[in-house]
Figure 1 (cartoon, rainbow, N blue to C red):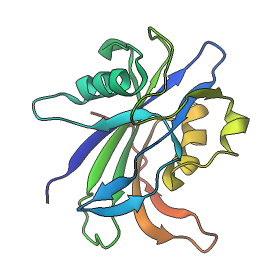
Figure 2 (cartoon, rainbow, N blue to C red):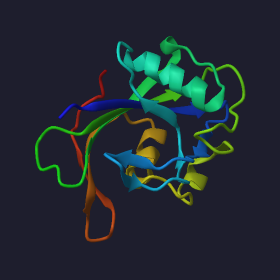
Figure 3 (cartoon, rainbow, N blue to C red):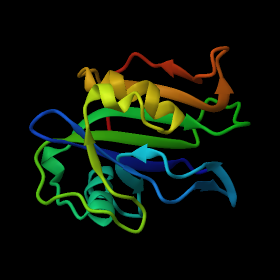
Figure 4 (tube, rainbow, N blue to C red):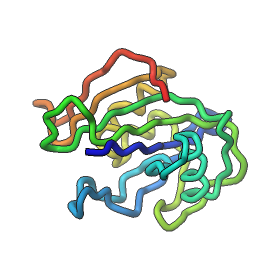
Amino acid sequence: NEILNATVVYLRDSDGKICLAPKKQNIHKEGKVLLNSQKWNGYGGKQELNETILETAVRELWQESGVCGHKEDLELVARIHFFWPGNESTTSDMVVYFFMLSKFEGVPQEGIEMGTPQFFTEDEIHELQMMPADKLFLPVLLRGEKITWNVYLGKTTEDGFVCFEDMKKTPTI
């Protein structure tokens, strides 16, 4: 199985607020819906052939928001290895690189894939409908921590949270 690589960019304004927008499209694997849309998310998508992960981040940010960012301004804050339901191996199905970007050109706009963007404080983020894992790690990232996690979709703890494992490593590309 080929591992998919993808990116998510969180825009951060001068007040430290994070820009999120509701995702309009479901996340699919082999025709099955893994996660429903309308969850608040950063901007990103899958890496294309012959593209670096930084190029992916800049391209996806532009395509989804109309905002121009530069590779050298991206700050890698997380590398999350996602394991789809039923994957019992030690190799993840998808690796997503999460970036913070404080220096950018333009104002985020609604697009084909993402709804109307809004900037939120850390306290406001807790109330949003987000992807299950994002709700766990975004507050950690907003505290300034950099993380590498394994996230096991389809597995939950007794209190209903998605299962994850902190790999205790600084994220790398």
